[in-house]
Image: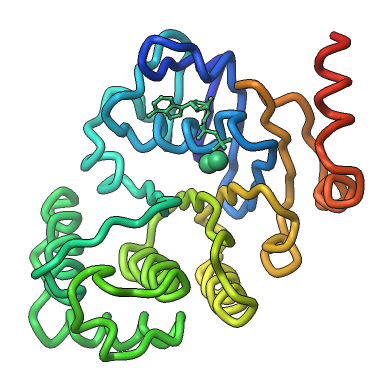
Length: 253
Ligand code: ADP
Ligand code: MG
Ligand code: MG
């Protein structure tokens, strides 16, 4: 069955059509990469799926676990198991990572009609998940993302993903600003968290991250449409040839 089913999705930003009919089907256990030139609409697609304000869907549909995703509030999309790693993570001064995560976990549990975690069970969960991304305990007690380096922010996001156990994670340009060690840890975390029941969409301009996170499918997004889909070899081809041939091909249609 389909985890995510996007059909003919059109969306506007500030009155301008950015997504022009996206079709994307994701099944449990799959890793999809979305690549494409800057300004193609990759981030817009992830923002629309997450329900970010300022993005207006004008046509098409998106279902998640068979539920109409677009009808849910951003919070409920997250509670239903959608996780979005932002290209530019926000800082939340004065709120420690631990308290932020405790609130997030317990809000999700409340939505799922589960009891809140006890303090000791929560700390156990934090310890367990910290190990997945090799996140320092000191980082976990600091304010959310405040003064974190680019690599620390990304590691922190994968940590949040580990704790929330989403069924679908969308990682937007997780490789931008990462040194090779941080890249390995982030990719390693994603790979460790992979199961037969969850799926990941990796949005990336470069092929580099895909050396570490092996996609089952690679899609090329250009001018608001998925213009090509292939296997991992497509990412290598794009690395070698760039995006110009895609642009030419699309303009000849
Ligand atoms: P990508 O992630 O592929 O680089 P984006 O989704 O960020 O592309 O942007 C696609 C297009 O939408 C660009 O032309 C960009 O200028 C425009 N756009 C995206 N977000 C906004 C916004 N908040 N306000 C105005 N224009 C936007
Ligand atoms: Mg961009
Ligand atoms: Mg982007």
